[in-house]
Amino acid sequence: MKISVIGGGYVGLVSAVCFAQMGHTVGLIEIDIDRASSISRGSPQIYEKGLGVLLSKHLEKSLHVSTAYDAIPDTDISFICVGTPEGDNGSPDLSIVQSACQSLGRSLRDKDSYHVVVVKSTVPPGTTEGLVVPTVLEHSHRAGDEIGFCMNPEFLREGRAVEDFMHPDRIVIGSNDSRAGDRAESAYRGIEVPIIRTGIKSAEMIKYASNAFLATKISFANEIGNLCKRLDIDVYEVMKGVGMDHRISPHFLDAGAGFGGSCFPKDLSALIALAQSLGEEPLILRSVLKVNERQPVRMLELLEEKIGSLEGKRIAVLGLAFKNDTDDVRQSRSIPVILELEEMGARIAAYDPQANDNMKKLIPDIEYCSRVTDALKDADACIVMTEWPEFSLLDEEFDLMKNRVIIEGRRILSCQDKEGICW
Ligand code: UDX
Image: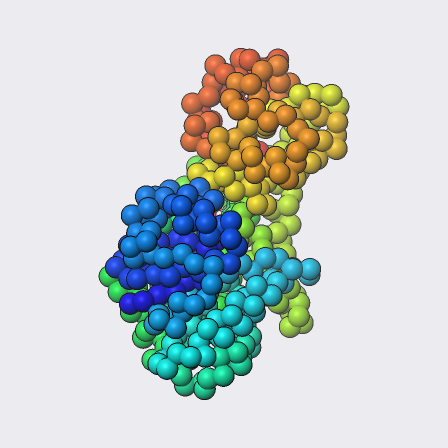
C-alpha cells in the first residue's frame, strides 16, 4: 500500500518506519523543518530502541520525509499522528489535529479516487466524527463517500514502541463504514494478532479506558503498598500472588513513586474533564490521580524521617526519566520531588543515564552529574526515582555518601540497607 503518515513525533515516526518495514511505501509529513531534517538525516530526536536502524534502512527507499502535504494524493490512506497536548481544563488541545485536517483536506481536492483518513492521535470520543470528518470534507470539497474515516488508537510504550507496533496484543480499528475499515485493516496485513473492529467512538474510548485502567492498576498497587509498609509486608510478594489470578494479570502492579510520561496523566485528566462535561463525577479516576500525586510526597516524608530537616543537605537524585530506557522526563515523578526538595532548602545532585539534558531544560538550577558516583559523593541521602537496570548493582558506590541513607522509589536496588517507598 501507499501510506502517508502525518506527524513525525514519537507515534508518527515509529508508525511510518514500521509500515515501511512491513513492505509499504510511506510518505512521512512533518511540518517542523528542524525535526523533518533530522529525521531525513537518519537521526531522530527521540531515543527509541531499534528505531534508528530501521529508519536508516528505509530512508529514501520506501520511506520519504517531507514538510509539505503534496504527496498525499498519491497515497491510499493517511494516518493522522499529531500531538494532542493537555489544554487548559484537562481536556486535550485539538488545534493541531484541526490544522492537520485542514491541510490534509486541501491536499485531497484533486485526488480522483477513494482515500481513507485514519486518526491515530488520542482524541476524546466524538472528535473524529465531530471535528476530523467535517474539517477534511470542508477543505477537500469532496463528497462524504469519496473519503472514508477510521480511528485506530496506538498502544505504544516509549522505549519499546517498535516492538509494540510489530507485536501488539490487538489492533483496534473503529469505522462507520466497512470499506474504510477494510482498507485500514489491510495496512496491518502480516501482523498476526486479533483485529477488533468497532465503531469510531468506541475505538476512541478504548484508548482512554485502556490507559485509565493501567494507571488504576498502578495507583491500586501503590495504595496497597503504602498499607503493606505499615504492616511490614512486602507488597511485591503480595502483588505476585495477586497477579497470578488470570483475571488480574501480573503486569502493571509494581508499586513505587507513581506513573509519569506523556500519556497516563494527560489521558486521565482528559477523561476526568470529559466526565465532568457530561455531568458525571469520575470518582475512581480522580482517586487514581490523587494517589499518584501523593506518592512523591511520601518519598520526601520518608527522607525527613531519616535525616531530619533537609535545609542545606546534599541529596543525590538517581533517575530523572519518567521510566527506564527513555530520555523523556515528561510528568516524571522526579519533577515534583526535585521542586519540593529545592523548596525545602536541599542541595540536589542529579544523575540520569539519558535524561540529564532534558531535565536541565525544565529545572536548570540544580547540579547535574555525568556519573552516578559524582552525585553520590558526600551526599546526606540518596533517592532512586527511575527503574534503570544499571542502578540494580549499585552498592559500594553508596559508601561515597556521608551516610548510607538510601530511599528507593522504584524496586530496583539489590543492596541491603535501602528503604523502599512502600516496602
Ligand atoms: C503508556 C502505555 O503503556 C501505552 O500503552 C500508551 O500508548 C502510552 O502510555 P508509556 O507512557 O511509554 O506507555 O509508559 P509505561 O511503560 O506504560 O509506564 C508509565 C509509567 O508508569 C512510568 O512512569 C512507570 O514507571 C510507571 N509504572 C509502570 C509503575 O509505576 N508501575 C508499573 O507497574 C508499571
